[in-house]
Length: 250
Image (tube, rainbow, N blue to C red; front, side, top):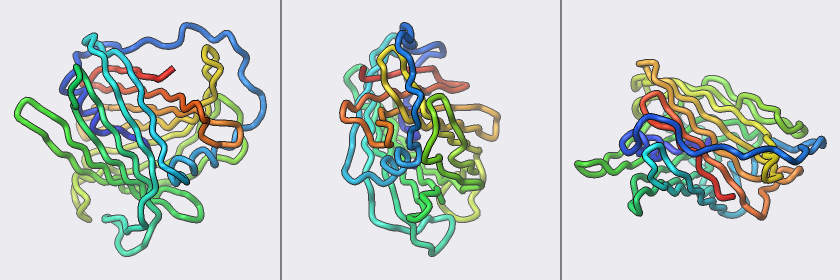
């Protein structure tokens, strides 16, 4: 499961002016931990959570409008991935939303099909609905996996690696046109200002015109990879033809 908020990116494209979004940390006064973090367990807890988990974050866009973004992760029933046929995979679901000016701008549903033994991603289905001036518009794409891997069971803060690369198909019908590519990476990060350890997923999508959109989703973790009870989170969005937005709940 990547946590790509397709609806949020599309809504930003429609709602925000080009420019910089919310600011970063004021500083990093605390020392990062030197011990190991179980990044694999963190990934497993996101793609296949024992119970539903939700985060809500806020940030100010470059249009000076306050935005609220929501993420909910849960497990779903095993299913086949539309592009690859009859193989049954485990499924992790991310539901997302973005509000601005006290109005719902978009919602998304990301379904990640993964191997139940290795936890490697085998496919991703992205559905999003965005409110426009003429009414809601729904988008549906599927990520066809090219390479796939998982994070290590022991790694330090400020380390990262590739989770998967994929071709983006314009629909979830086998043989549909490739409309872009995506690379999703993982990282373990330390926020010194808040003294918080995060597990992050960053997705970079390139369409056939060369335009780039990026999303980085970070959730607080413990050293053993458990999702921390404080539930701190940070989401960063940007794009060639959109704006940048940084939102958090701490």
